[in-house]
Amino acid sequence: MNKKLNAFKAAFPYTVPIFAGFIFLGFAYGIYMNKMGFSFVYPMLMAMIIFAGSMEFVAANLLLQSFNPLNALILTLVINARHLFYGISMLKEYSNVGKKRIFLIFGMCDESFSINFSIKAPEGIDKGWFMFFVTLLSLERVWTAVTPFSILSTYIAQSFGWSKPVWYLSATIKNLILSTLSKTSGNSLSFIAFRL
Image (cartoon, rainbow, N blue to C red; front, side):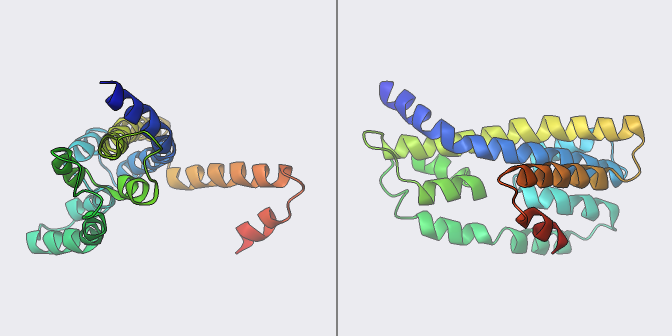
């Protein structure tokens, strides 16, 4: 049990940035779905049903078009084909982890792949359990971040009747980044970065 707890503690800090990033994606997705005319129920259901986050954004357009299952299948395969290459890259890493291998293969997403491929388990930490908890925390944080923030941002957009909510969100983020860059050592790169 101590081996698992140590692996969990070692994996946890690597997954915090994933959670932070997906908060903003959750807001953007909820606002996007609202702009497309969907109620708050749709982002919640789609987060539960669709494993590929990229397809959640594409699925909104597919739901508004005439039903074409072949087109949806081909589009899904093309968008998620990168997972074939992820899997090939991880064959060696997943070869000696025992029964955890099944979950690691099932739960591999962009975020867990990038961490498990590039970060080696710290000294004294079981590699299999480390990768297991990176994958588990990546999936759990995506779930806990995207779903509530999608619902919240959809509700906010509906409540305030925002006609251009995505512009408001991007302008806010741009202003935060710009003000942060301008405060750090008088950096003039902030002006150049936002003019490109």
